[in-house]
Image (cartoon, rainbow, N blue to C red):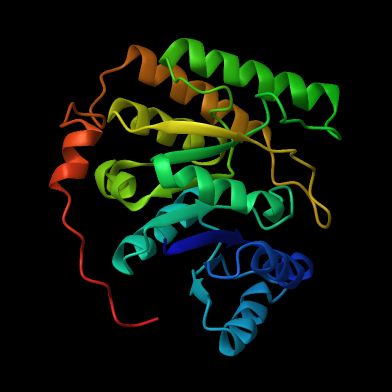
Length: 258
């Protein structure tokens, strides 16, 4: 299976090289796309240097700090255009441990979306504060209850999607960021009838640098759930089931350039 790991970066210079080395130690055949938002600390320049010496590493430069959600969407489009079979979301700060990649790769063989879950047996958040656990835990319960998403960790950001999912869920209409982005995508995947599975992970706070969590990110997720539950669903039309889509699917031609 041809896989792409999408890693958005903003001031991740100290993390980038050791992270990529760790990824390749667990998944040597995968490719990586670094989506850098013009990091002042030269993360983008470092990514270019690594890419120049390793054909598995690709770099997408953006003009500024445009948000996590748009970075992943840009990465998803890259995955579709270059005919990858599956695409990962992964943070650059080691909170998403590369050691779990073999588990993801095994699960995605028989699933459409694999979520690295903190809230199923075997998952944990050992160095989180009580406040952060309450925010995350209650947020997940709220989203599951209001939207009927059949997973324990619908805000998790360590994920792997099949390309057919990304081709189906209408990337052009996604506007959320942060937690809301993860909830929105899980909701869309569910509404289209795709198979979602969870694999346990231990989620650790970042090793180097400062957290990008904010009150605005939490508030956006809350308001997204409310709007989606009680508003008109203009962006989640009823379409053919995932099984029918899979049967009708035609593989797009790969794009030749890197």
